[in-house]
Image (cartoon, rainbow, N blue to C red; front, side, top):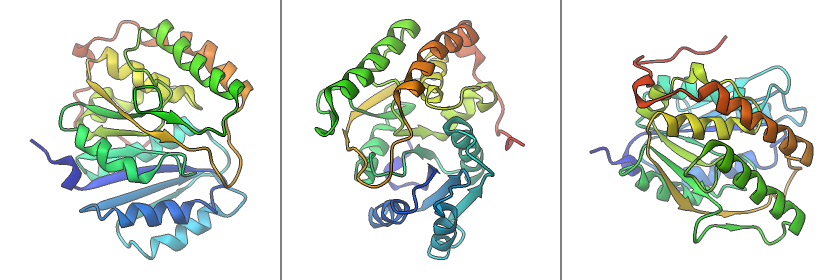
Length: 259
């Protein structure tokens, strides 16, 4: 059995205008003293210089820190897919996805890795006992977030409580089995599609309670329009993957980097 907490690990961080937050995220991750930490930053041409900040951090972790510079704001989903493809090439047993704005506490990472011993993906969840949202969230924002999860779970029949969660630890073989080429969503519906495909393919998910803190620096990229668009795209996800079964797991040993 793999000891994921003490094995090599790749963390994928998509960024857009996170120049003020990125150094702190990297500092905390390094202070966790994980045995062999690899970092992949996927920056969407941030006008605030996030890409340049990431480049300067590379010198502190030579050989274990990669930066992907993309031209323009191409979306969260494609950023994660690009990072996942590179992470699979690193061949680390676990791949973690998380936000770079400190909403996901890097200190929770070891708890997710520990749960990988018993499941195929560990999900940092706001909506299981022990999980919490920042008290600074207003009632309307809380209701919208709760409704988005309830709606997606109901339409897709998902067992997860936090289907839009962006803090996850994946086993490498789970990402390979999903077959990243079959994931088509961009934006925040990407999280829902990944959760749905994983469940349809028979992968086990564990939810780990986390405290989701509101960002203190910068502005959120999530707004009401984005969430409303995601709502109708849930039906697209259902239709596209409705016939998947565990027999459809990808048999490829590797995936190719998207062009």
